[in-house]
Length: 152
Image (cartoon, rainbow, N blue to C red; front, side):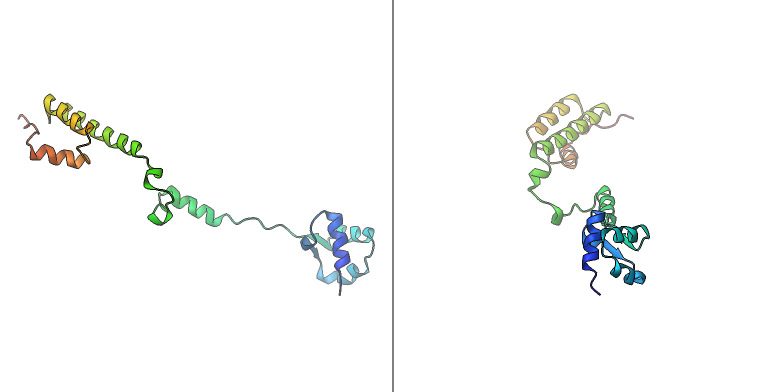
């Protein structure tokens, strides 16, 4: 049963592609008899000819990925594009490190763990890039006996 012309007329009337036109399988004989646009219009009113719903893009996977990214997942080496410097510049890395070190020195000075001279020495060494991390600072202070003894 060739209903190509009916499908073409229906798609013209409904302003959609012919792939989206659906014919009711129980009323195929009525559709075959429909020759004019008026006949097709009547079939549309009777819901024998219907437009198929468009399929959207499924968002399930996208939502799952977004939740994972909120949890700081999907950041492994395989997911990275660009050099390490592009993700966190050398300047930003330095700023983060020097702020941490300077806050540590300040904290130690306020708690009377180091004296003023040691504080100045530590700041100069930090500015020169001597310390790798906070742990390195603590190791340096312990090795050189620069921590003040707590007064009881």
